[in-house]
Image (cartoon, rainbow, N blue to C red; front, side, top):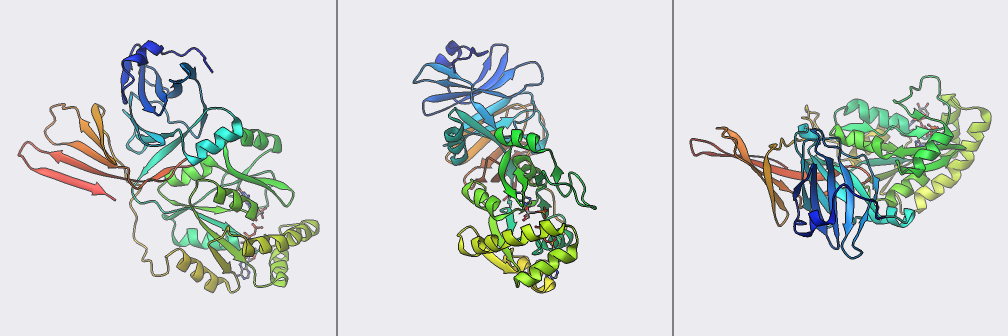
Length: 398
Ligand SMILES: Nc1ncnc2c1ncn2[C@@H]1O[C@H](COP(=O)(O)OP(=O)(O)OP(=O)(O)O)[C@@H](O)[C@H]1O
Ligand SMILES: Nc1nc2c(ncn2[C@@H]2O[C@H](COP(=O)(O)O)[C@@H](O)[C@H]2O)c(=O)[nH]1
């Protein structure tokens, strides 16, 4: 609290209007929500590192908040538009897939973190253009066949699904690769990263620590894919309680005998570990069936039939595989002005004398989904170009 900022209160007094870029050797944009003015940006040294400070108008004090989420990389300037509980940030001079970000200031996730930490918290979430499907959480006892079903899905729909690579403190099995099957890590390192808020969820499972990092989920969204999480029931419960909207599927074995056979035949665990996993399976199945965490229960008896049922649950039963284009991208003009009408953000190119350019971009923020921890989905845009011959071209993505 009260740490001396690079910016002075006087800079804000007259000019605390939203979206302002302050010119005092700094390059910052401001946005006011309620009693707080958020000052976002840093030193104007060509590549701007994006920091956040808050001026609490009630207290007349500067606050440096705890910042959650992966912060945006440096840029050449930025614009800020306050929305209800978050601030839309438009980065200038960044790659098209890195231009739209949200700084959450009063969302469910931010409030949870504020309660947990007892400090002021803001959270970054990158914007993803176009339709992005909800992540899929798959749980079930060890050996039921979650990994097998997920591999089949990823093989049939490689451009549609991406796997959230968890962290674990257990040792790798023979064929497992670090960074592909898991991020294999030390307990002390993982515990430190959990404290730093890097995990969406974590749990102690069969004697080891497992967890889904925020980054693991973000990486899949950034690739324009639907994220699949293979996590235990405790993890599923935590994700259900978080602001990550997902579909929850519990995979059940046809019987305990069959589950034991699958675990033994897989041959990856010691006798002691198999017995531990079977003991835990009973409680997991009970919770999976009776709790209200899961949207669907999938019995994995005959593999091919179970896989077909899984595809049906995900609306893929009559899906014809067609090449998919990457995630939608908006290329914002570096010099632009920004205004807001209802749920539409109007980004206007400041004329540079080009003959054929998209002069106006309309960003629709009425259907935003998801958010920190993770990406903000559901951004739609229209680019409107006016040409020297008087014609207007409209191109959009929804
Ligand atoms: N429907 C099925 N019928 C027979 N065997 C199956 C079926 N599904 C999976 N298996 C086999 O059961 C074993 C366990 O499957 P898998 O490794 O996918 O389980 P899992 O749920 O991912 O386990 P864990 O949680 O321990 O990672 C594997 O050897 C797999 O080939
Ligand atoms: N809560 C979480 N559970 C996880 C995660 N990654 C995996 N798991 C679950 O652990 C068990 C055992 O897995 P194994 O690879 O050691 O056989 C299994 O039920 C997984 O679903 C995670 O990130 N969080």
